[in-house]
Image (cartoon, rainbow, N blue to C red; front, side, top):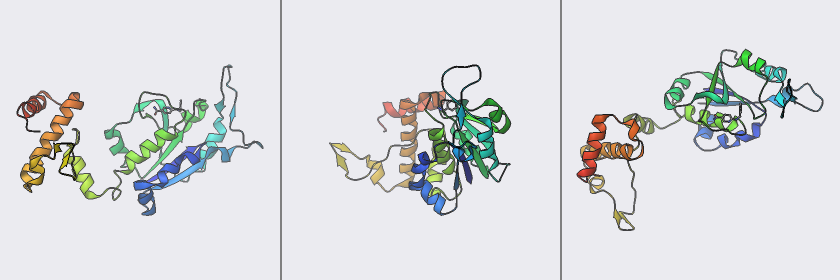
Length: 236
Ligand code: 4FD
């Protein structure tokens, strides 16, 4: 999966050069192509913005500079996503559908905004990472890259992918490691039993109870009844 990133702040993408994403890049599973919009300024002072028509505060990024930066990308078939608070909210379903693409182009805007005409010309889809405003689209672009990269074949261990499909739609079960007793709290007996049928059943129940306590709106009537019963019977 290739990600082209159109940004005025390519240095902000440094965090992607670490951890799981770094390894995926080194294995050529993902490729991150940073394009500095400022490199396409025709101005001797590298200016990329100008005052808004109609007046008002702030500046607007010029259409031609963004368009030239976009046209420096080889593959014009790659879907162009504009990260903006006005976009459709990103969710796991959208993440998995984006992971099926071969290449994506991410356009990062700033509070000052980009001339509407170049947006109308190049943007295929507007995406938001949630209903709040940030100073730029760079962090949303990194959130999207991280979430989508997890679904690219080979990025996660096959074990992690299996565990995730097991808990699809519900929250994760609770996890424990040594010591066996911490501040008088014991690790659930069944997890030390070695009985994998019982362990799987305990984890299914733990997942259901966690979901009931933290995100009950994710459960149907039947699941709510079962969660209440598990809690009543002190099974978790
Ligand atoms: N919630 C998000 C995306 C971008 C952003 C910007 C227009 C502001 C939040 C275009 C206005 C980009 C989000 C930059 N803030 N700020 O995904």
